[in-house]
Image (cartoon, rainbow, N blue to C red; front, side, top):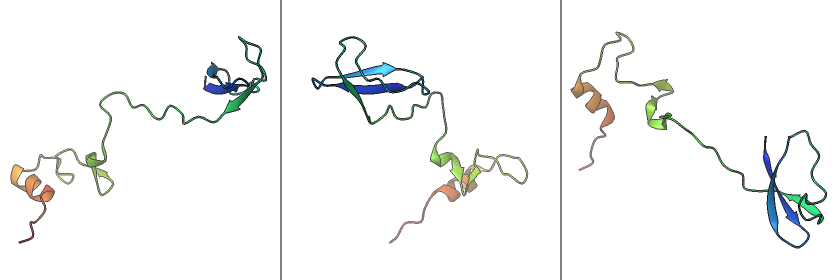
Length: 89
């Protein structure tokens, strides 16, 4: 269930967890003051586990150190050559 932020008429702010289908609160459940729901920055996105990174994909395809055509592991020289960039003199 989502957590909403409300601002009391005295200026204090509190969070309240309620169903998304419920109407917004009109009064504070603890003080009885008039409240207004405010827009918050949100909690953001939380990723747990090993996850993935943009560098895991090259040209939209997963790269896991194997040659896609043969399924065999690439030689170290080839893999290094593909990832290094030429230096300008």
